[in-house]
Amino acid sequence: MTTSSISPGGSSPLHDTQHDSPDAASDHSPIAPGEIAVGVIIGRASEYFDFFVYGIASVLVFPAVFFPMENRLEGTLYAFVIFSFAFIARPFGTVASMAIQRRFGREAKLTAALFMLGISTAGIAFLPGYASMGFASIIALSILRVGQGIALGGSWDGLPSLLALNAPPNRRGWYAMLGQLGAPVGFFVASALFAFLYSSLSTEDFLDWGWRYTFYVAFAINVVALFARLRLVATNEYDRLLEERELEPASVVEITRSQGSNLVIGAFAALASYALFHLITVFPLSWITLYSTQSVSEFLVIQMVGAVLGAIGIVISGVIADRIGRRNTLGSLAVAIAVFSGFAPTLLDGGKLGQDVFILVGFVILGLSYGQAAGAVTANFESRYRYTGAALTADLAWLIGAAFAPLVALGLSANFGLGYVSVYLLSGALCTLAALRVNKALEIRD
Image (tube, rainbow, N blue to C red; front, side):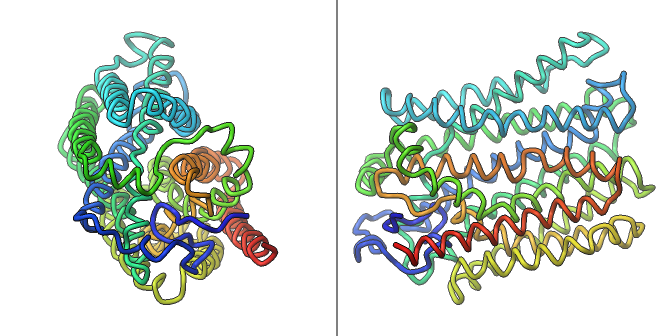
């Protein structure tokens, strides 16, 4: 098993020892790690905003607009099925975009991703509901959601890997968490926008036209962010630096054949964080709307507070990881997630106070864990596989850890009880611990 490379958010959490050459951490380029971090944060914040706009709409809007023929529970479950389509499509987008980059260049790839993401997001904003188009509206929503997933797969720019290789050796955990700050930022803004519209408009107006404004905003933000990233990676300095670090696309067939174990281990090492990700953000909102008397607007505000706490946790994770190592940080937080899973049913079924505690505590644990999860989505690839390996492992981590989490959690809890949410979350924590253990064994064997 090769141990020569660093994961996209910093040194691999699966190998805390520095393996790169001495000049890997001290580049003579005028481009500072902080400048690269700005590009990473811009890109991730825009992606997460779009991600959460769709996730929240899957609970508050789509059951009524696209599945009015079903009861609220069934409509939400169907909406969550379509929600997962982007995660299924994302690896295919990555594979296609790597081929485009090899033939036409990085700028052409990002431009194509921008074009598809813009069409898909704007298309959802203008899409008529079931009352106007019937079943065709559901098909159109599914196609546009797949388009979003393909576009997100094509938007991989290699900046997280570049940041990792240019961060100071003793600050890798700190720089790893910077890109992860995009998640709470995107969630906070999306929740604030929905809370404002939901509380300001009548139900009829909100479902008719109010929700569409969130997708207009998502379209605008993603276009601006992708153009900003395109201008960044298209400069001669960045292009040279990316080439120096061998951050170029590799054959997907070759990387799967020679680095398959790294893909699998890296994806499962982040599973606990990614499973908790949706069980704190999207799933609780669906549970509240279906089985609680708590105000949706008030609950969104609580989730906004949780996002702030999550951001603080992400920052703290960088300090912790630089002191005890990223693998130890991920392992310790996986244990914390396992413990937290045991309290999930009691808190979610504990009225407003219990539900609020579930959100706030959950976001703190999520921030501490997710802050270092970017490194877990890339195992120890050889240099020539690092660029493609980082993208594919991230896609797999999202697919197995988060794509179906809202659907499974709501389906199990509604039909069999909240205890199954604990089982689901616990299984993610155990998978993370197992992946870290397997990787350690392979490291020792090598």
